[in-house]
Length: 348
Image (cartoon, rainbow, N blue to C red; front, top):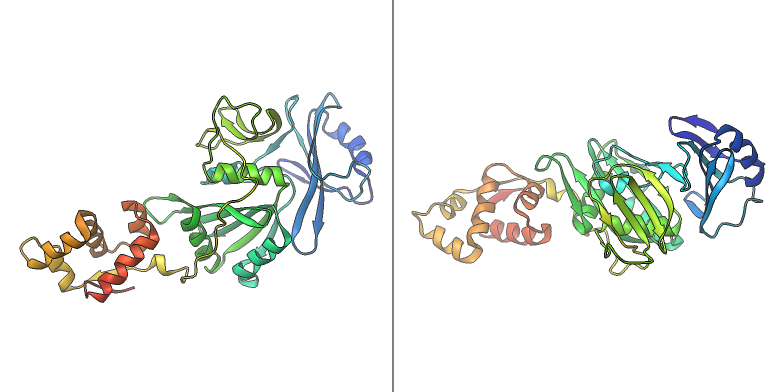
């Protein structure tokens, strides 16, 4: 067990959870102890977790998530955090300053597993996680960019990405975020981290990342509730866990416990969205109201198409254009191909 700024993080080793708890009550009389069963064959998976709120050295509240076998089990992952007395277990955020709200909402439950991006092909890793029915977050960092995919039962249920070089730093969701994640993973110096979660926490964070809101008055409610007090995981109306974080997006959010349409890695090259195209002389004619090309282009692509073509002339990348003008990358890719075939743009 090793000390970290947010508390004690480690394993109980030969001690059972019950034996470890005796010592932890003395070390953290007021706070939270999380004890988790973690299976690990190279991919850490949380089988179950016990969340214990301690007040005055005694267990004030106990909640079980997943399939926790009990405190008699040895070699449990443990995270003990001191905080003001509370009847609700409370853990710090995995990344409290992250630019992505869903990443801020992730609890530091057990240590993540960092992997060198160049040693683990992303497609093969996702296939392995799907086979395992894995629950958790896949986080990829490259430079100042960060992206995460939330997996529920091995399926990518939601994805977010922060792209600092695009339009002053923006958040992509869904398929576009997964495309950014794949691109980040291919950059030099990129890191990949597996953050295992219990099924309920994974489903709640996925619902939040996908912006799946629920009616404010719904009872009994399950999912994340984000407000000025932080992040709370509710199950059937009861708060089982709080995360000390300050995400910007607030409200009640529902679970994604059964993913619908699974997000898949794009088949195109992940770096194509960073390509930049130059306008040809023919393309400039299409932007000149004094030419016949202007009217034909406007009739075919409209005013928005003209604005996009003009932005290419200013040196914007495909990704920057999609973000700035609110165009889906797949739609823009079709336009760029047509413009290349028509001799309006070149390069890329």
